[in-house]
Amino acid sequence: MTSKPKFAMYWASSCGGCEIAVLNIGEKILDVDANFDVVFWPVAMDAKYKDVEALEDGAITLTLFNGGMRTDENADMARLLRRKSKILVSFGSCACEGCIPGLANLSSVKDIFDAAYASVSTDNPNNLRPRSDCAVPEGQIHIPVFSQLVRTLDQVVAVDYYIPGCPPESHQIAAVIDVVIKALHGEAELPPAGATIGAGVSTCCDECPRARNVKTIKAFVRIQDVEKIDPSLCLLEQGIPCNGPATRSGCGALCPKVSAQCIGCYGPAEGVIDFGARLISAYASVIDSNDPAEIERILDGIPDPVGQVYRFNLAKSLLQAARPAWAK
Image (cartoon, rainbow, N blue to C red; front, side, top):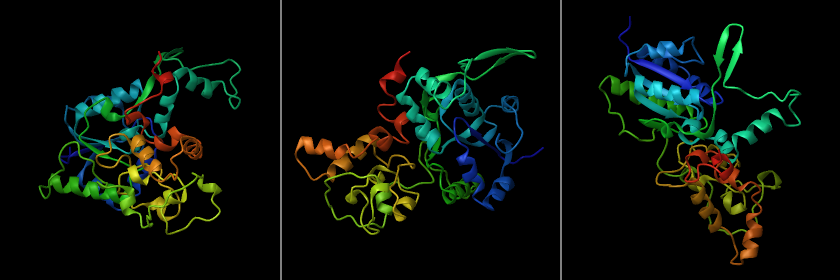
């Protein structure tokens, strides 16, 4: 028997990148093992749901929960781990904002399944589709039900802290683990409940070394169509849609530093109510025109507006979904 605090990490509908980011903290992972009893981490150890169910409520000290809520199983596990955990952390962009899977909220479940099971790239001559229950020789099995919408973790259960990023930067994860371990030993205090940790409070622009000269543009361009990018000038002022003005700091502006626009994976900066609305305002501020027709032409240079301004944030935005996804 061990008296160490218990640690869990779970992935819902996600890609696994958050687990890789945790492993990338290097020797810090040994601090996790030294200070915690890892009781549930499906990607790294053999553990069953029944093992978690058997624990007393609140028995797990810290749970890092990544992935969005796409199935009823995801939501059930969120509720279970909420009951069993003293500290539940919404870990990574999928859990915090819905991330790339959240863009499926533009479509109905039928349209999503049609794309997956009836497109030209799919060999499915019998037009098979997922079923929630299926009889097999061993008995009846239940397959998780695909939900109408992708939801964030805090749209299902209460969350204590948020760690953004797709995935979170490994050095930020290591810093958070340090704080939790020190708090467990009475050497530090945890942040107030609901806080975003492992990130900054300002915008990516404040970490970006590129100069902002309040230049205006006559066209938005796709970055691959730019023959030569000025390495010192703000990308937005070069007509390249950059999401830095709305995105939370903390990553170190890694993308803009290498002439790739920020795509917003660290989520909304402190005080940003709607990520897309803030970005649209930022884009509008660099357009050099007062003519509605010309402004529309300039904005047409952004070929996928929703994917641009809500790439990571649609499920957590004020919109949450498009009309087809809401239809029953």
